Length: 50
Image (cartoon, rainbow, N blue to C red):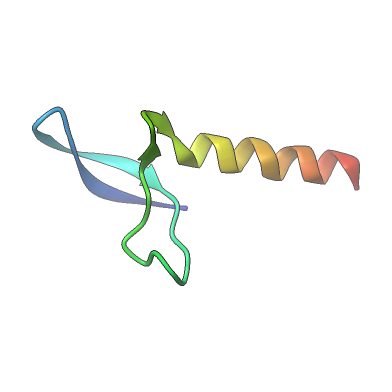
């Protein structure tokens, strides 16, 4: 996850985006849900199970 400029409501703002080899420019949200927070929650859940 990296902070990158995105277009939000017609303005350019900096947000956390999830980058992968397939999506090097990053994915900011999916259906209006910020993807970085979902990935972070899944990572912390996986760590707590270990």
